[in-house]
Length: 157
Image 1: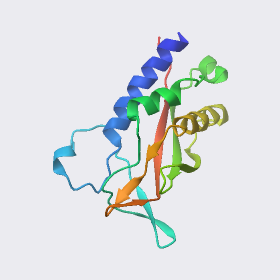
Image 2: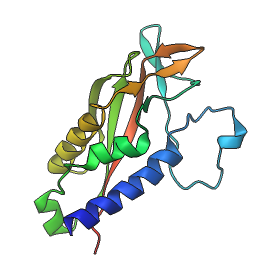
Image 3: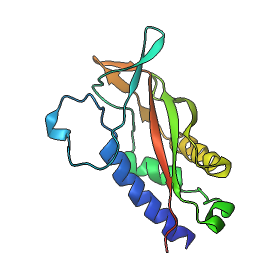
């Protein structure tokens, strides 16, 4: 049952991240989907000593691809036992800062589901960022960005 739950989460997350990881200020209308039910990811770019909303030429991404990032992220993730017993489901949002080299510089909980879920979500994100990443690009140069990654916990069957 654990494998079925994690497989379902992996597929759900692939869809969510694939659908949500475009800049909200993206100008390429061919990639916009107005009927998309997933939240759009807002990237904040580090400029002049502060993070501000802005347009990116390219979002940060795992060189091996989003599917490999998610598989690495969820590979050793455990559903918190107490959460499973109580039937708790939901999403933890993890705020990440990816530097100009494509490395995870910082991660913290932006939206909590409870201490055990938060701990699993942070561990999962850190595992995913063990893969090599391409940095975000703006005006042809790598930039430091801040954004949120949803980590979903859903009981199945």
